[in-house]
Amino acid sequence: MSDNGVTFTLRLSLDDGAPRGALFSRGEIDAVAEEVSAAAARVEAARGPGPLGFLELPYAYGEEHGATIFGDLFWGTLPRIEEAARRIRQDAATFFHLGIGGSALGAMTLVNALGPEATGEPGGAGGEIHVLDNVDPDWIGPVLCRADLTNTYANVVSKSGGTVETIATFAVLLERMRREAKLPEDVLKRRIFVTTNPEKGALLELARKEGFQVLPLPDVVHGRFSVFSPMGLFAAAVAGVDVAGLLAGARRADEVTAREPFRRNMAWKLAALHYLGLRKKGIKVLVLLPYSNRLRLLADWYSQLVAESLGKDGQGLTPVKALGVTDQHSQLQLYNDGPKDKLVVFFSVAEHREALPIPDAWAEGSDYSYLKGHSLADLLRVEREATEVSLHAHGVPSCRFGLPRIDAFNVGFLLGVLSKTVCILGELLGVDAFDQPGVEESKEYARAMLGKAGKGYEELRENVERAAGEEQEA
Ligand code: PA5
Image (cartoon, rainbow, N blue to C red):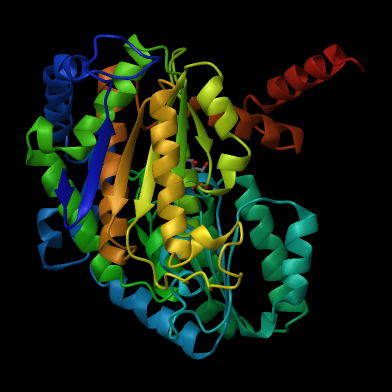
C-alpha cells in the first residue's frame, strides 16, 4: 500500500497452518474489515464543529478556509507566523516554545524531524529552539542562563490557560526578560506570543492586559490533536519547515483515509491491527520503533495520542517509545522472548541526506572486511530488516510505515494518518478519544496542593493529606 511513496506493510502469520505467537492471519484481518470500515465511516460522518474539528485544520489557513468550521479564525495566521519566524531567524534569536503534553509534543516532533539540526539546511532557525515542557529547574535554569535573553522570542501555548507547568515557566522567563535582559515593554509585546483559546481563559486575559500577541487555539481542537494549529506550526516555521508542504501532506492523508477502501487504507488497517491485537490476541503493549533519530519524537507524539485517547474504561494499549538500532541492544531480547503481548510499529526511511559509506579501513581478510562497499544507511536498513524477520520468527506481530524520505509533505501525511487511526480506534473501543479525565484529575490535585483557593480545592487538599498519611517508609 503506498501514497506519495509512503508505504504501509504488514507481516502476517505464515500460511503453514501453525499459529505462531500473536501473529495476525489474513483471515483475522479480513474478519474485522467491515467493522473497522463502519467505524471509520462514523468518524467521517461526525466531522464538523465537535471534537473532530481538528481534521479541518489543514484546510483552515488557505483559500478554502471559509468552508471549514473555523471560518475566518485562522485567516491571516500563517502570514503572521511566517513573518515572525522570518524575523526570529534573521535576528538569530533564541525561540522558546512553552507548553506541555499536547501543547508541546507536536511542535517537538516537527522540529526534530524537519528542523535545521535534522536537515542540516542553512536558513533554518538562526538561533536555537527550545521547547520547555518539563519544569525541572536543573534543566530550565541552565538553558535560561545560556540563552541571550536580550534576543529572545517566546510562544506560550496553553489552550486552557490553566496548566500550571506552562504558566510557571512563563513567569520565570518573563521575569528574566524584564529584569535581567531589561527588555522594554514595547519590545516584550513584539517578542511574546500566546497561543490559547481565543474566546476565554486566564491566559487570554493576561495576554490582553499585557498586550502580548495572541494566536488562536480554539476550544474545539484538543491538545494532542493540535499539531496543525499555531501550536505546532509556529515552532515549525521558526525551524524553517515548509509549512505549506506539511499542511498539503496532512490534507492528502485526510482525503485518502476518508475514501480509500479497506485494503488500501493505511489508517483503517493500522486501526484494525490495534483493535484485533487488543480484542483477540492479548496485545497490551504497542512498541513504536522508528529507525531514524529524526522520527524519534514522532514516537513520543503517537504515544500520547494512543495513551491519552484510548486508555479508558480499563482498556488501552501501553505505548513504548523505542529507537532503532539503539534499542535492539537494549529491548529486543524482551520483544522476542518475553510475553507475546506486543505489536511493533516500525517507521523506516529509504533515502538519507547522506548515506555515509563505511571506509575500507581494515586490511583485506580481516574480520570486518564484509563491511566493504556498505554504508551506514545500508547498515540501518539491514538491521531493521533483520529485526523484522527475527520478531516474525518469534511470533511477534509487526507492521511498517516506509517513508521514501523525511520531508514536510511525508511528515504531514504520516501525522494525518496516525491521527485518523486513533479517532477510528476510539469509535471501535467505544471510548471518548478526546477527553483525558485522568490527566485533569492530577492537574487539579497539583493546583490544590499549591494552595489554589476555590470550590473543591479544600476537599482535594484533604484527600492529599489523607493519602500522605497512608504513605509508609519501605
Ligand atoms: O492532549 C491534551 O489535551 C493534554 O496533553 C494537554 O494538551 C496538556 O495537558 C496541556 O493543556 P493546555 O494546552 O490546556 O495547557
